[in-house]
Image (spheres, rainbow, N blue to C red):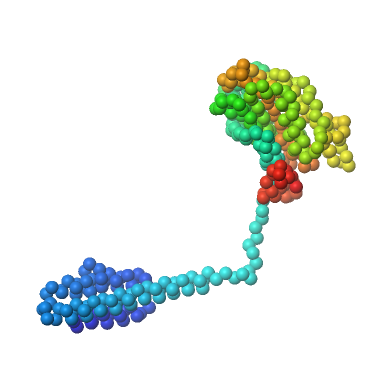
Length: 355
Ligand code: DAH
């Protein structure tokens, strides 16, 4: 019996010292582990004479309970101490000035892409995307533009290899091809994105933006094309009426083809869309050439439709009164602060496209 009283006293005094959680766990093992001091006392039980065994057992159990209670209390105490220390060290000083942060602005081109996507999605167009690096087939051949066709020079293409197999897409029209080969008609999509041509002056930049439109179904005709563009331009410029003019043109991938101008005038140095006698060309369009449909395995006896390609940068300049295209790509932070948009102001026709 004196053994276990010694053990008890030894550990009570150890537990009363300033110890950490590891040490408490260490004591626990020393006492109650497989070869622990208390565990070993329990193992002695069988060899204890029967007359004192009962008392031994009850004393041993009492000591065991006492030490275990002490250990639990100690653990609780240490944990509370740790929490208090943490609270003390992590005190928030609410009187400190806030950390400065700056909020970015949405670039006018991104804003206009969002506006365009919002307008077209409301009349049933899906938004598709294609890669900037295209192959020659999607960019030209599939679009009925044979080799040696002047359009290939006209586009001043950035080719990426000697064999002219890969290039930076010169227009968003290859997304028409990508969309049609991977799906089944009807198709009703727009495809906004970056396009590239070797061209640079006040109104041309080697990287610019277009949005392609494609609507293929049974019985789609030029009337639908006109209606769709008319609707789009009115919504985009947020005006009730516009003047729109279709001029006959040529694109290899459409037949017939047209270029579309919108009427405008300059009032107090500002461009006003929808009035006046001046004309601004904003897009190319037409009925998709049967050869294009054949290339993407669409049955031309059942399906037909229209396509269009709009220059996004031009639209952004017109709508937001920006007169030098190059400013778009100069990454001047002051310019972006002035012409940029609030990131939380997502354009939609319900909430107002632009504010
Ligand atoms: N891809 C033409 C260009 O970049 C624009 C265009 C014209 C697109 C007519 C079309 C279209 O889809 O039908 O000049």
